[in-house]
Each structure stands twice: as structure tokens, then as C-alpha cells.
Image (cartoon, rainbow over all chains, first blue to last red; front, side):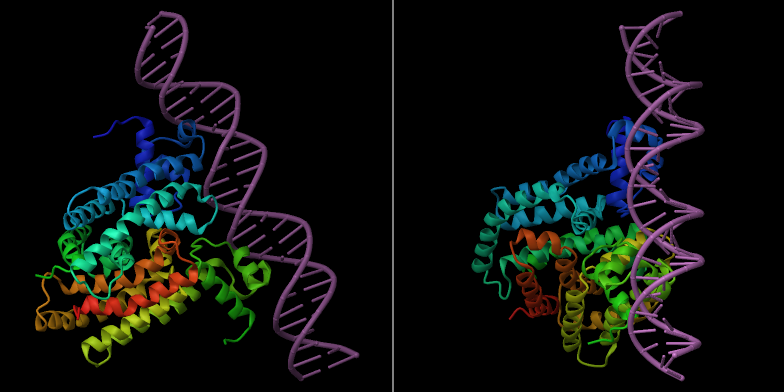
Length: 200
Length: 200
DNA sequence: TAATTATTTAACAATTAAGTTAAACTTTAT
DNA sequence: ATAAAGTTTAACTTAATTGTTAAATAATTA
């Protein structure tokens, strides 16, 4: 359990509304209400909306993507690494299903991209090495028709899609929230096998 | 080319901003500006925001998802059908990369779900039959570890993810808009092979 | 207990957007 | 040419949201 200071309650509420509930344009009073405090106190601690924005987004991005880059940069066997990254990213998405949607929605507003600039440059630096590593794996295992770029996009797609589309897909499949989370959780091993082409 | 009536110009602009540019909360004056007319005329033709919303969303959903359901209900060989559906959905997403994001963002606001209600019920009706057909294919081809539900989610995920994440992934891969569209386009055959497990 | 800090209340200004309206102007059709 | 429909301009109202502020109240700490 984390500290229950007002700062943390507010940050938790902001993250819950933005990244977990998918209310990409949650209002200040909604965040305050969710945190059980009032608007004045919210401004007292976080000055304004943009500031709160930056803080909670940076924390969430560090927990998910920066951590994923770190896992994928470890010096362990490739297959083990991929399995580990898939588990990590699905665990993170189970907590914040809409964090990608949020970032992209912000990017499309093309205001200040400085928010995501660290993520992008960190990602590019990491990708360069990682693409080579994938290429080696593809050649060593003679996996046909798939480029290293496809490999990464496939991995992310198979993990992230069921979370970002939860409101529709859960309904279409006729599952409760709990059942849907189990469905997504179970996909971990299937996705690992599929991207590594281990269909045994 | 479509008619260049003011109605069509407005609808095209609304679709472009909402579904192609990902401005999920585009303002009325932005739509008017994009269409080369003014706010008053926009209200003259479409009364209010919600009305414009409903009309353009219904048209886009009919073109993409309802049409996809129709393709997947045709009485043709399973593999041909999947290939055809993948081509269709990627062609649609190339035109409106953010149509799914838009629908989901609206659903998360949990106001009137009546907008998506037709899509959901149409989808459920269609899914029931289609899941059985997938199940037959999986059993006939002894595909391991994949449920029919996984099969559908995988197919949609592999098609849709690179579009909904375009602003990030394109940047990370260091591609121009044109290059990125080619990258997505090329994925058609790879995705078909991957979901059908034809890795020859 | 006294002083400091945290929190609430309530009112306020500034901004933005939606939607309406009336008047003027332009194009099209009769 | 005249009437009708289409289009623009500009002003306006209304509502929502952000952010500020001062005063009152509660909780903590010295």
C-alpha cells in the first residue's frame, strides 16, 4: 500500500480516470471528487492541470514503457527476454488499459510534444540495438515473412489491443469484467508462442 | 469523387478530423474551417454537434465494421474469407486510422451508448456463427493453444494496432507518413499467414 | 495552549465553446 | 427581374471549465 497523503490520493485518482477508466478529458472537479477532496486543494497541491498531467504521465510511462525498454535490454536469452517483456506489458496494461490511448490522443492534439519527447528518444536509442537482436533470432530460426519491425509491432499489438478496445470487445464476447481480465491474462503464453513461432 | 455539396464537404471534414487525424474532440469551428465554410452554416445543415456526430459515425461504421461482418458471413472458403477481411479492414483503417479510438473514447464517456448499440448487437449476432466456423478451422488444422476468441482478437489486433498508434510507432521506426503506410500495407499477407498458421 | 499547517467553502474573473438570431449579401431558379 | 434558397457576418446568450482568492474551520505540532 502506498502513502495516503493528499498528493498520492490525487495522483492515484488522476491515473485511474485518465489511464484506467479511459476518461481522456477528465475534468479537475471529477479528479478532486474521485480523490475525496475539493477543487481548491487540488490546485493547492498541483497548481494547474498541465502540471498534474505531466507528473502522472511521467510516473506511468516510467513504470510501463521505460521499464519495458529496460527488460528488453537485459543480457539474458532472447526467448526468455521476450516472455518476460510480454508478461510485464500485460501486467501494466491490466492496471492502465488506456495509457497508450491517452498518450496518442495527446500527441494528436499536437500541442506540446515535450511531454512524450523523453519517451520517444529513449525508445529510439533502445530500438536500434533491439532490432538487430530480433533480426538475429529471425535468421537463426528461419522465421519467414516477418521483419524485425513486424516482430515488435506484432508483439505490442497482441498485448495491447484487447485492453485499448475493452469496452467493445468485452461486450461483444459477452464477458464480465473479471472474465475479460482472465481472458487477457491467459493470452500471455499464447502470444509468447505466437511471436516466437514456437507452436509446439 | 463524391458530390461537393456543403453537406458532403462538412461530413468529409468531420470524418477527416475525428477518424483520420484523431482529433477526437474537434470543435465545431475547426470542422467548419476545414470544410471552408462557417459555423452558422454548419448549424444550418446539422442543427447541433450530436446530430453531426451520429450521422458521420454511422456512415463510417457501416463502411468498415458492418461491411466486414458482411464479408465474414459470405459463403466462401474460410481461408479466402479471412484474407479478404484482412484486406478490407486494413484498407478501411488506412482511410480512418482512429475510428476505433473514437468509438471507444465515446463509450468511455458512458453517455448515450445508443450510438454504438446497433454495432454491438449486429456484431454479437454475427459472432455467434463465426466463432463456430473458426473453431472448425482450428480443429481441422490442429492449431494449438488458440481459442476462437483469441483468433479474432489476434486478427483485429495485428491489423488495427499500427494504425491507432501511428503517431508514436511511425516516429519510433523513423519512417515518413508514406513509408509507414507502405509498412502497414505490406503487413496484409504477413498477418494472413500468421493468423491462419500458414508459415510456409 | 498557542501557532502553524491543512482543508473547506464560496464567491469571483477569465476563457472557451455551443447554439441562436437577425440582417445583409450572393447565387440559383422561375 | 423577381423570388427563393444558400451563405456570410456579427452580435448575442448560455453553459462549462479553469484558475484565483479570502475567509472560515479543522487538524497538527511545538
